[in-house]
Image (tube, rainbow, N blue to C red; front, side, top):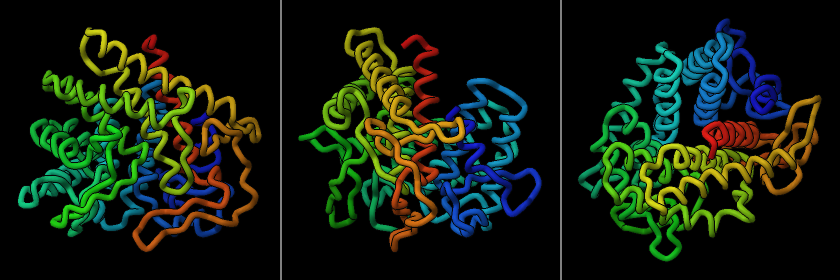
Length: 362
């Protein structure tokens, strides 16, 4: 039902081009949004990732065609090719395209994967002690770029670089007091930006869990345990991931849920700590999904998820207050965050994550 709601409310052909589908970023939509005049690169990457989840859950020709159609539309709407100037954006798209190719045999975007891998691998900056900047030419190196970039490179076979990136994040951005991952660092000044966001924790949890599988080195499982404990204590209430906002922030909670499911399904080891960590990660996903479902609105028979899964969802009133781009390039929340496709994608991400852990008996 989460999938169906996105398909019916948000998907439409890009500029009436046959064989394309792209997500309209608001519902109800403005004329500008329906025309795809504004470009939300990383939201659409997560739309591809969700479409892959659905096809993996119940493979059908329609779902496989949808993945290819969204990928094709992404390339067309980006105009200049598969890449852009933001390493976090490119990392999210690389993750989605790699999964599409590996799990569903979608080969149309192979050229895109090659281009994205080249950009992400080449962005590592040893002259400044490592790390990937948030955008081309920037002096700000942050978790939202390095986390997903490392996951993408790990899945593309660049294990050594992915491990270097994980070690850099742990040494540079892990707050020793809270145990959480901080946002980023300005170089060469060393000034740390200290906000903590759910999606930063999510990508590091997923990265370290996958590295634990690939390397067998205990430090990665130990980092998962430390960070998972901090997330459970500081970013959940009664086992439910704390509420997010709209705009770009609408995706944050769903990303944490996705990578908690990765921990639940992939973290290796039969020691008591590892078994408990898998169960804890799964329990947060299940509790969050139950809360989000209980607090949804039903609109024409389909769910509308809230931006805070522990509170009743609000129905958007018209098209006013639509999210807009800030000077820094991020997208603000609509007046009613539930209007934003990012919030509804988070709900879909969460439901797919809950399905995965439940299907595994966790």
